[in-house]
Image 1 (tube, rainbow, N blue to C red):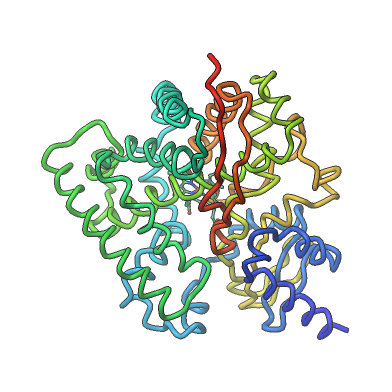
Image 2: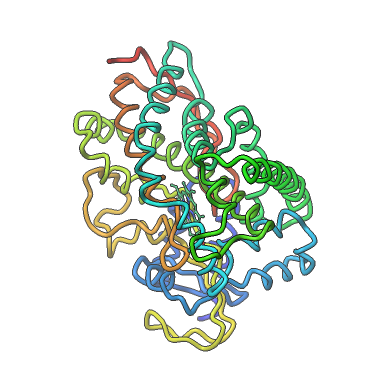
Length: 410
Ligand code: HEM
């Protein structure tokens, strides 16, 4: 019986690696949840699809990131020799306390709520400019014209990456972040090239900011904190790369997935158009309905642990399926229905615990400003062709979403 369930889980997880499974993972998630809030794959990994269990395990600081096991199993025991793997798997995202605590404290001191709140007007101005460029009678790709340029402009301004340099990062970050989904020779080779270019660029920019500081995050990160703590050179580059990549790749996904959902649900689009004060709950619902991050980098129990009513043996690897948890009917009534005024538990799209997304307030602010403005500007907005799903599941988004805006209303 247990083997039969494990085989079913294994087959469902394999289906989630296919293009169709990645484009619409929800039917497979439903089947997984029907097996219970968690189930083992044939290789012993515990796959969690229930909301409450996923929330508990995400917050359990005793579970650790141990990427070296998965890397070795995929044939990359020498992962530190690969620039793409080194840049990703030495970053704060995959570190454990106390290293993680030190890194997170240093960046949090520079990435403050005040700095994010201070961006509101600049974000609104960028939204307005991009809407102006989007307007017209011909079909336009929403990803190229809005979902990518908005977050890359915002994180670029915040970090201090000059605007003329930002565009080249989209393909580079996509190649680099591919290692969160697939670990194979060609993918890692692409990630290595991309990470080398990203690191060289950021190393040069950091040197310039050290010589001539400006009012940006990179300048704030190159100087020691008040207590004398500081990031060494490699840590600085790794942090800047993580912030820059995480700052736009995921938010591009939120804007693209969110608009695709609104176009499929004109009644909900009309609700938000007429009630822009729903921007807060609407953003949470769009994050829940089709999360830009579908699963968390795996956690491992370093010793036997009891958590969420489970006994996790030493070495147990745990994968949390956020996208499945976000559609758990025990927590969200009619989870497959998009309801922009939904209240209740937050989606798990920003993770939880010590690794809870550092950029959540920024991503929320961008979406809360963008969606109502977009719908108000273009009452006749329609889809003009099929959306193209981004490869991969960890990061889940679109690479194209053709739309026709119609005339802009003022
Ligand atoms: C809708 C947009 C976003 C989503 C869905 C998202 C999601 C997530 C999730 C799920 C994690 C936790 C990963 C884990 O525990 O394994 C995370 C971590 C992180 N996110 Fe975001 N993110 C978004 C936007 C941003 C932005 C705009 C930034 C900007 C700077 C950012 C920076 C980070 C960083 C630095 C971490 C690592 C935190 C740590 O390990 O302590 N994210 N994000």
